Image 1 (cartoon, rainbow, N blue to C red):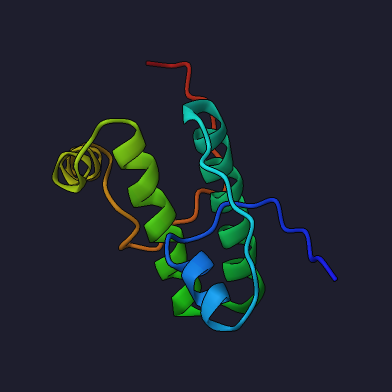
Image 2 (cartoon, helix red, strand yellow):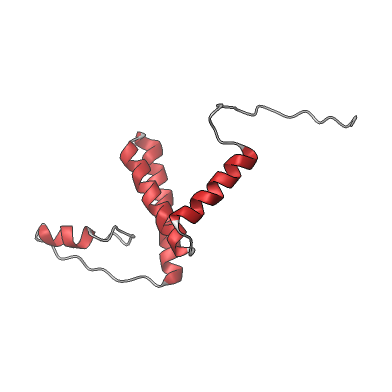
Amino acid sequence: MIDVYNKLVRDKIPEIIRQQGHIPKVRVLDNTEYFNALNQKLSEELAEYLENGCVEELADIMEVVYAIIKHKGLSPDEFEKVRAQKSSERGAFDDRLYLVSVEANYTK
């Protein structure tokens, strides 16, 4: 019996499968395929987190985010600077603000 997955997996998954006595078939993705697979994986992990709210799913999301950052040529520190700059300019989400509406004020 062959189970077909066709998805990006963590680096150690093939070895774990071998240790379980199974034979994984893998291939290395080219840059475009890899980027597309990372985006798909991000979507999958987000859906899993939204379904169960598990902190482990957040860790999976972060792992995918770090892989995307690396693929884009940034280090985690460089990315953190981008995040901190945006937080400084636009704020974070600490105040729990929920924008209900905006009324136009044309008298200015």
